[in-house]
Length: 266
Ligand SMILES: Cc1cc2nc3c(=O)[nH]c(=O)nc-3n(C[C@H](O)[C@H](O)[C@H](O)COP(=O)(O)O)c2cc1C
Image (cartoon, rainbow, N blue to C red; front, top):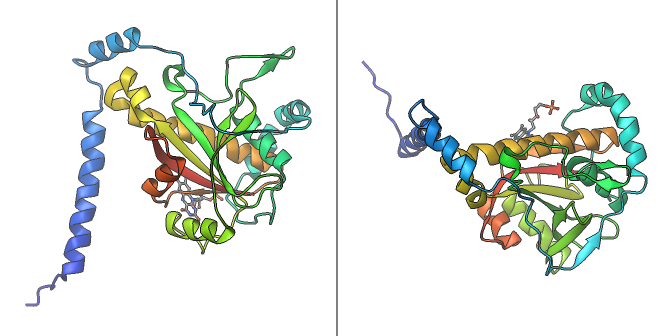
């Protein structure tokens, strides 16, 4: 009778896998609501603040977003939503350079509160648990006309990008991408990378351990908006699940922000 000899590498990867499965279930089960915890949860929710907005960085240089005739686009988009939904697909057919106007249109369609008779509404085009808007969207511009290579926070309320970090050189930017995003350089270089990050502690104050579920869901809602908005403008998008969280968090430089999801765009 032969028995399978398990190598050290196999043992390590098996135990890593088991640990991952345990962690996922541990988190899922421990953040479940039960009939006995639901009253506490509702009480805490009622006591907590329920209005928020994505974090702003007013001390950073601001670059105005220029959406051109965005509101015309919105009217046309409403009619063509079924077509846009049917056309959406992941693609790496990226432009060499992304015009700032196209980036502005995608960002503002996806994130900015609506307008009614020229007045900005509070309502945004995506839902957020408790209206806290704990998720921030950051843009890494590798090749955007009118933008220096760097990382920017999207401030949809002020219709601008807040410049958080500038790369010293193209080489620094390329090397950072290669070590931070899995698939680089397999993935064709995109002119823009989107980082979905969140202020977990802010959302935790209201939702406790369920907060982590909620920020992931909110990031998914925003990512879907961005994928549909870019499809409607003929711009490619590729969701990217493999990335080094700490590398992104360190570049953003806000200790409250944790990285959740990324997308290549262009
Ligand atoms: C959470 C998530 C992570 C993903 N990560 C990657 C990735 O790292 N690399 C990649 O090429 N595609 C990635 N994708 C894209 C999927 O491969 C793609 O959505 C799937 O094959 C279906 O194709 P479609 O988007 O064209 O319909 C990811 C998609 C999701 C939702």
